[in-house]
Length: 311
Figure 1 (spheres, rainbow, N blue to C red):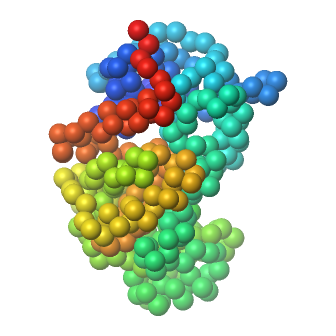
Figure 2 (figure 1 turned 90 degrees about the vertical axis):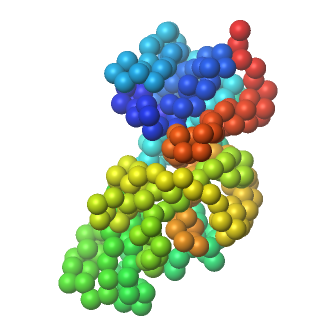
């Protein structure tokens, strides 16, 4: 995970999962990417056993610290935030050196490598807005001219960072394309603008391919981005027939890659992103629906790992 010291205790899904594990009597361990290592072909990490609570400023205590081989852990949630850079990629390869079929990974390291959050939806092209991915400035300009109003996204962006809207004829279109592609050397995502985005985008949480719940993220103050990290506010939401169809179509692709806990983004009738690294939204859905989605996630983890709480 990312540093526990700076976690958002009233928002972060990882923290909610830790609280639920602790409530059931499981030992809750955490470590960071730099704590992972491999010695003599055995993947291990320096891990901290922690006690957590929703109390701002003193939300965790370290109970002990030790080096553990990964297979000594029953379930391992891989929930470090993007970007998925070279260090992240190497970490997923080290995770796969765990022995004996343990731990049970949520999500699978190979699946995390395979499923770029911005590009994975291209596998289901009929479910997404008209999209161009590339670095050719002429093609990108022509695409914006064709659709008239487009959204530009960096391929490795997250939390709404670097997302822009442009229209055909914008005086700054060429400079923006040059800047975002580093003068035509790095790929950029251009998608046709979806007018329904003004009402927000919907985050749907999936567990083993089935929808757990949803939250509509409504932009604030003229900011077009529907990301909670960018200031959007959460609104109670249910799933439409079209959104259930999207989930059903996506489920086999996720299952094939061991991607069990996933957050997809839907605007209007279109799938826009498939978030697999550290999808958030459980806490907001819980608050709006009076549910406990983290309980269902840990039920699933216990079943798959055959792990009973330690007494």
